[in-house]
Length: 177
Image 1: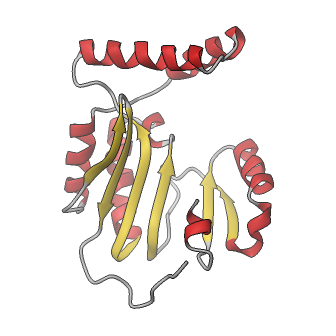
Image 2: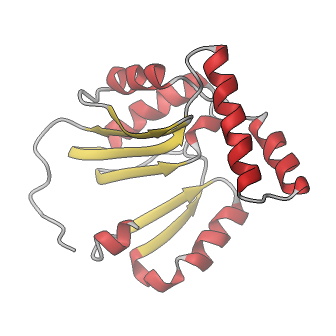
């Protein structure tokens, strides 16, 4: 999606699972030199920078809360002034009742998508490893990391898209589609 919107951009994909890197490499091969991949644990490996944007999807919720806080600080440090962080992830319900409703809806969505029993059981097992945090906690951690305008751009039950921009002058080059 990013390269379709910004065709001159370059993207580095980072994951600690070689299988995920290989799947991404195959899927994104049509983008050629615009894509590179690095096998690393972004929770502990340096992010580099400065970069214009950092985007994550369905990943950070696997980290313990303190590791999330540390990662948000690292992301802020890696961004150029005016850079943006987008995190499409899941959040924990604010109360046990809200979380139970989120879980029920997620299971209904899986069944409506006709997910087979084996895949359904595997999804439930993977969900047991999640370390989700509430969206108010995540917004507070983003602000604590230095982001002054962290917000939720989209939310559907537990699935949440967080956006945060590093203060400062945006880079002078512009990217046009």
